[in-house]
Length: 289
Image (cartoon, rainbow, N blue to C red; front, side, top):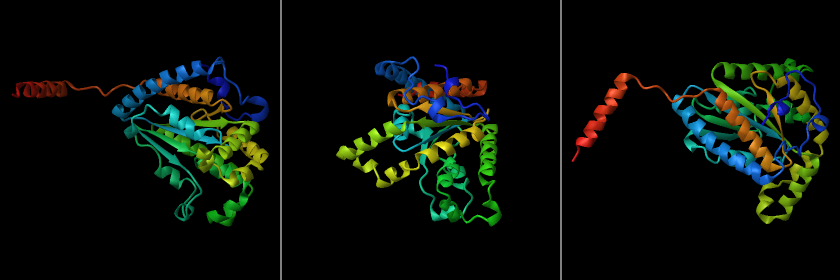
């Protein structure tokens, strides 16, 4: 599958509504075909993750951003279903705690970065600081910033800081993959109603979700501006159609597998001395009664 159609080119001004079809499914017209491809990629991902863990050189940071009900949780659940739990960690970034507000806005993200050999997943991320906080500027007052740090240039400054942060990560072997699950406003409404009508889904719904829906256009504007300024050569944004969950999951898995393949991962080489020690250990084991 050609991934170029999903990438936001660095510096390009986009329109999520005009330039990206939320119901796009590429050459996959049948749900079962996409599910079959996903199953194969889950197996590939498990193999790559095993080598990644053994090599212990790179780490992979996967970031998911989206509007509510776009399918972040289910995508993580399905795509990572074959991963060894020892090699994967997931962090969901909610409203900052008082401790987190006493630090800079990237502090809690630094703490959650994956170790070498592991896959780290951010369910929402530091990008909330140029999205939610921008839509709700009153949240900025809680961050206890100096007055001269809250001027009109704060968003451009944060874009620059985030780009530098991600460049630093990539330079140190932490590969950054950023996905925006692009759901339509109509599909979000259908999913909200389903959560209300199905008792087993009620726990996933909050009245505040509908309140945030009222800021839809604001969010689209700040997302577009964020993509324009933070989609880089070293950490591009992928806009993934999210009206068809089966395609969303397949596309994300395919991109992650392709990125890991590019790393040309290899199991650690064994020295001749280590090989001899292994053979001696085998002789000892076979000599046991």
